[in-house]
Image (cartoon, rainbow, N blue to C red; front, side, top):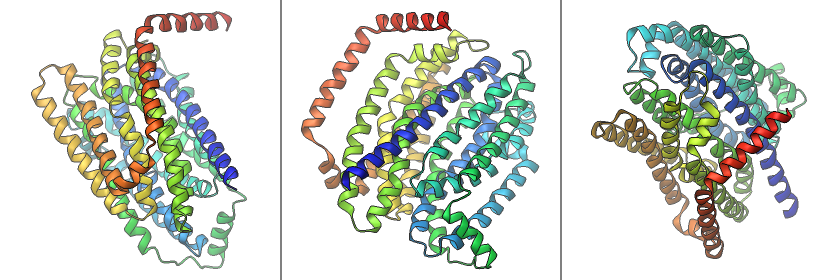
Length: 487
């Protein structure tokens, strides 16, 4: 039984990681095209602000607070069909009204998300914000359906669905030209909304024979949709506070960057996209697979099994994240040059983006690990504590960002300071989650022998990369040219 459990966890993690990797590869292609057509300036800043608004609410209401509140309450709900129907129609109505509100008052909301934009830029950005925001409505429905799949340990559909967003932008790029940035903005925006619809259809097809969906239909047919949601809304409210703190932090970074040199928002976006690859591939993929299992273990009183899993996950995740940080820091310039330096994205943009990436990578390890340990809080219905931790991290990020921006004179360094402040908040998040998890429990997860061997290996790994960087780059260029000639 234990062997089957391990095999299932590894299989689910592998499927989830491969799906995320596929999506992220398409995402890098997407960002490459955005950099080519929009560069790092006014038009790219407008597009990223327009994307950030639905992304902000998506991560709060859909992927953040909703998922963290829905699964624990769904697990213990007796009438799962009625519970799902009640949650679905109430939240769908709320999200629909929010989308209509943003559509009618798009200029107001754009100003909130980009305080440094002047009136002319706001006028350009507002219609695009209104279009992109409808992506949120479809993604909420997708997240609801994905939660039902995750509960059944089926991660393939959801992990690959995000690729449809990237694919839509890539397809849209075939219909635009480099000298038509405004037209490009509209094509990319409509492609974003259509990708949300495509993801919804993808999930509906996958769930046509799902037992919970059938139970929902039966509840509606028999008019038995009333159920108690008080505990759910309490957890959801606290989850909103926790998720919103993290997302407000990213919005504040954008707002601060809008006062800096032109292209600052874009530098942060491009660097963060690279930073998010190992974070999503390892930390997010693992936590998505782990959450349903941890919930079931704790519900059945098998806390030792949950702790045993955390021990293995902690060791593996630490190694992967540190190795990723080393690779990213050593090859930051080469990565940014390879991915983005073409079209309207020049060498100076590459240089700044590379330094911003390094500043983000400082916080890769704590950000990744805190996602793992925060599962313990959500599984034990401690969303309120998670919210308090998140808001303290937000305050730390904001204070450091403003402090650095004021004392630093060089405009390019100010952008780095914003990213570095985010990394500092990641260390607090990790420490605070460990404190709630219990230092005694945390240190019990650490193997001194494994830690020593891991440190020696990673030190040697970093030394080899740094010393032979030139030869490694030359070898990779040779492989690239061979493949290019072959294709």
